[in-house]
Amino acid sequence: MNVVALTPWDLAVAALLILALAGLSLRMRLGVEKQLLVSAARSTIQLLLIGLVLKVLFANASLPWVALMAATMLAVAGREVMVRQKRRLRGAWGFGVGTLSMFVSSFVVTLLALLLVIDATPWYAPQYAIPLLGMVLGNTMNGIALGMDRLAQEVTTRRAAIETRLALGQDWRQAIADSRRDAIRVGLIPIINAMSAAGIVSLPGMMTGQILAGTPPVEAVNYQILVMFLIAGGTGFGTAVAVGLAARRLFDDRQRLRLDRLHG
Image (cartoon, rainbow, N blue to C red; front, side):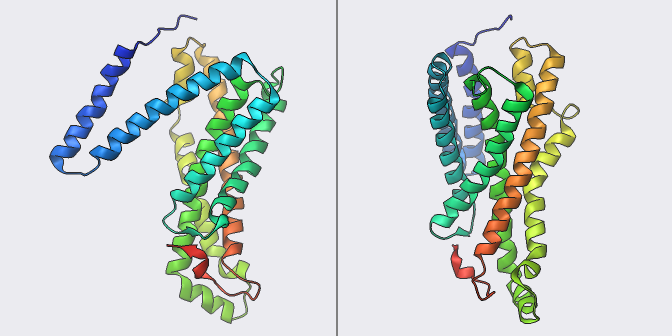
């Protein structure tokens, strides 16, 4: 494959766009120039480090090391889900619900792809397992964060209606059913939009990267379709599990709505 290698100078030219955008923010008093520069620096450092880690991992592929990498990714994603919510569950539940939901959905979906679709040897080959898990986990993380945040907003603003339903004899599932459906729907919106626009409005990142690396376009398209279906499945099931667990946590054993279990 004819891959054009990028030098640090090439990346520096691209970084000028970030500096220009920060200057625009400063001039227009948007107040995001610091966050923009810090985020750009973080992404650069994190990507360079993960590149070195993956280089070592690819050269020394073993199940324990792949599992450790996957567990680290899951833990970081769980924290991101927690901090992205304006109002989150208190205590360990704030971290546990999102993390457990991502583990159930993302890991199952990725294993399905590795064992039944790609059929690599060994099945945990890091060049397939880590990128697939990363893409599924990243998008599932966004869906779960959006869904749980929306659920907290819904129960807060519709508290009176939910408590009225409880007083009329409905159980907690019936009382919060509308809010739960809205939360799951919000979590699915990004992946639905991404699938609708793929190939017409935008060329997804994985497909673009493979084409730039010299992969035949049709083969790159096949992998992109696989990834988008995996992401949709992981996001949908993960959001449904997370919202369901969070909704149950908001009620006690006596069917009372407990907003004091939300932080913020």
